[in-house]
Picture 1 (tube, rainbow, N blue to C red):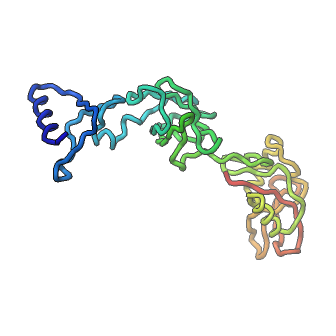
Picture 2 (picture 1 turned 180 degrees about the vertical axis):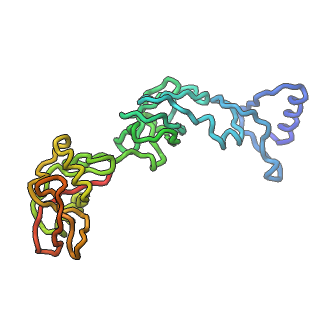
Picture 3 (picture 1 turned 90 degrees about the horizontal axis):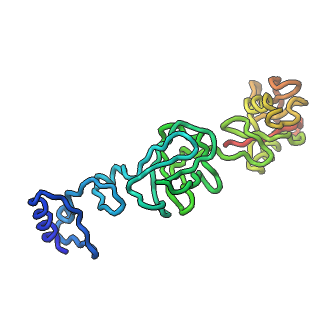
Length: 262
């Protein structure tokens, strides 16, 4: 179909004062010699599933944006979808006020579909600030969040507990060793030596978290002290007790516990 034919037809339609949706059972080939002439203009801003989208509608993406109500079931209604969302469907969800718990998505009554932040990692509504624009895509059974800066915290590894929203702490201390060996041991486990603040926070929640042996001796931390070649040690007698200990290899062995950044 030549551009001239399309133009003539559109002019005729406009002359009659009506607007019609063109349909064709074959590809429309635009063959004008100049790029600016190879375009279809005048499309109304329609959002229906079988409508041709104007460039303006595609750019603003309004047909795929939805603002679900608060709660753990994010129900959205989109005119552009007439059936269950197929694999590859891309939506932008404006997060409602946070609600703790796994989030599911309901699209035009279809679902619910789990909202995932990674492999087997559900999105917890409490981790997504209100008004966040979540870019999500359907894999056929679940929606996956694409913009990583809003992913929820990583789960705590086995043998650790969430000391706060940012880190996890081991439940029990490791046997005594020198400071540098303690660092290497934590690293081999995919963890790191705990900081002073993390120990205090975990120690104060020892009963709730199930932490053991928190105040029976001095433990290494990864915090420096005010003395050369010394690091902060904690936990002898109370959660708030602290001191300095030489970090030189072979100088002294102390127990320790490892932490994990979520």
